Length: 314
Image (cartoon, rainbow, N blue to C red; front, side):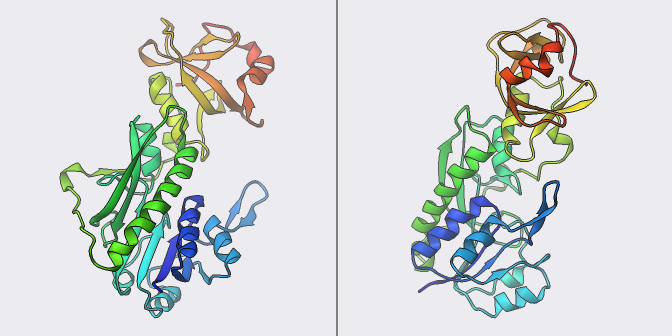
């Protein structure tokens, strides 16, 4: 039986872990990020990977920083055949990568060498890509720079957001990993080096990127809204207050109004953006309120806005 140290944190990692268990890989340990405080009540919350590991009575390790930790030495001493990572969220020291007998393998949420880094799925949406996918790759010291074992692409649908793509790609990742692992284990796999000239980075989303400004086109704003749903959510400043937009669509009509104005508030709530483009807001969350569909918003707070009025802060 092939032994595995599994490393993952969010929901994305759970189908991958479950797939390994179901296919009789011996999971020696599950390494995940520490529990964190969530929400207004600051409730201590376990990571999805930890919840899955506990369900199967697997040993869980949660070092704040893996490098140089006592936990890392314990993991090295396990002499596992493989390390498998799926959105773990920490840098892995070379000493640890080299401690396994066969390979350290990563399930990465993009078609490498495009989108190395922590937010590949989000950037595929931000940039309006037609497709994304999964790369099964060898882990090396340099971030997401290892040779490629296998890849599979999927189409990005117009109504996809980060949440739906994470769900789809976690299943693609599970299946592609399970299909690829036997050839890694028996040594027959053909590795493909990444083309350094085609490398694109996708660093973690910054607080500044969460804000939608009227100088964007409607398509750019909509791509950002999709990329940040369900977490952390994109917002615009409406008359000095945060106004989250969870769902929108690029309208078919155009406008002569300057960016940031109400184009329509009867039957739809439409805002003007750069180059005469128009965005229909479909699901919103005014400051201090719960998420609501646009009909509810227009029946309440939204009814005060008049077409032509500039409401989005620059």
